[in-house]
Length: 480
Image (cartoon, rainbow, N blue to C red):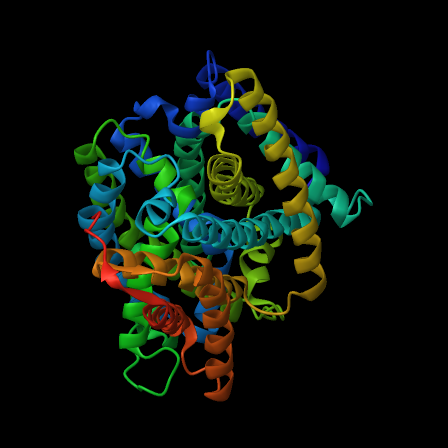
């Protein structure tokens, strides 16, 4: 694509985000940054969460993964519904009951100081990995579409990518994110719909013919019933439920948006409608992936070595300029809709959980918050460069494998706190939460990676058992 056109698209898009940021950050305080003063309309949060949940990973990697896994990912999506039900009916009432800003304060109230810090630490680790993956994707696309032709090195494109987030989030925080996520979700879904329409038109098909071709192809297989396969339905379904619970319900980033709603009832409506819409949206991404492979076969195209490169290659080099423009808007919106809120959530968790903001004056809070925001931006920059050096797999598989190891301890901690009344030796919690992922990795390696996404469940169970081993005889009254 013409570099001038690409620069114009990026400049226009971020100018719009900055305008929204200016409007939403007027009179913003530290409380506004963290909670949006709990005044967000639930429907706005629900629509914006679609983009934050899907991200640039879904935008590129889910269509690309259709080539090797067909529609098997949809088994995970079906599991999401069970997970979101648990979030709405169990976790959201807990968070609103305790009026939490950081959800990991619950662990402190339930178990003690070290449990609180451990839960927050594993979130910081998990979300840093995820946000870096997602920004790695968008930086790679920008490098391919623009900066490479200008002779700009990858590390410079990463700096630009992160700096753009910093510009529109450092002041308004989560209040700005709720509104920008809505805009970004719109652009992302529009890009996918436009791509599907253009693919169907270019292939000379009608909508009905396209659906039938996808249905008749090997790519449309959803259910896998071989229990030895990593794609076995039960493993995928249960993993999907657990992934939804930990990566949304036990994740400060996603819950921080929900906790900006005016009431528990509004937050539950948000989760319900968000989960209902998410199923057909994921099916749309999978359908686009099948069409991309069918288009490549029809035109004798060589499939790129990295499946994640298929969508960018087709959109930018084989379809119309309009398709390329929409793809760029879609990938930028998809990546930034999750990465910007991640940066805000990382700042929130560190400030609230580790710096004890309740004891600081407002002016001190603001200065410290901006420094922390900048520090996490630099951390993301460093981790992205590490991923650039070592990445050799489909990003979505890497993402969920990493999440299985880093979110497992959080799952075990919350499950133990909510399902038992036992108290634990708080000083030993960190040891348990470090040993559990190591044992999970060892078991998974010995079984030939049989667990797949199910590694999250194994990790959570091992953490739960470890907490049981360090529990005390006396019980504590339930805080649920």
